Amino acid sequence: MKTVDDCIFCKIIEGKIPSEFVYEDDLVCAFKDLNPLAPVHILIVPKHHYADILDDVDADTLSALVHAAHEIAAHYKLEHGLRLVTNKGDDAGQSVHHLHIHLLGAAPLSNSFGKA
Ligand code: 5GP
Ligand code: ZN
Image (cartoon, rainbow, N blue to C red; front, side, top):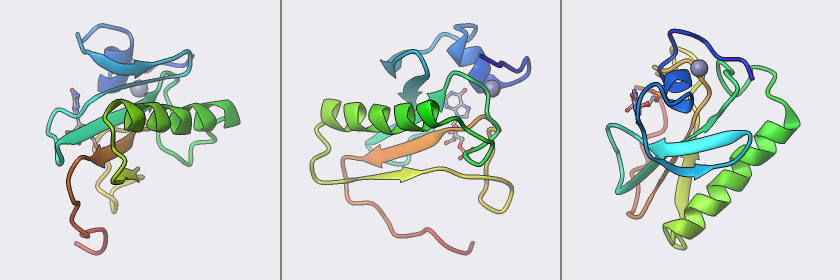
């Protein structure tokens, strides 16, 4: 499991920054976003440090990320829908360079996906 010293999410995963996990298994964990953009805003994060979704992520980890989304959706009863978003790079506004998938839900979501 690769970790990076100055990565905030590696520190959370390693327990160096106290954080409550809403989901955890061998490959991924999930915790609430510090600045939520929806009533439910969870970050699903692999324990291995990948820079982003296109950083040669292994198939088991990709599968575990989706499995976590299922579990979290069930936990929060998001039967009316949810949004999964992952940013890669500057144009997308990626601010933490450790792969994470935003899971947003529990309210109607805006449609502001595109150009800034
Ligand atoms: P990005 O912009 O890279 O797609 O998303 C990074 C997300 O991480 C942001 O939504 C931001 O609020 C969240 N974030 C940044 N630092 C922390 C932290 O220390 N703890 C938690 N829980 N979330 C964080
Ligand atoms: Zn990291």
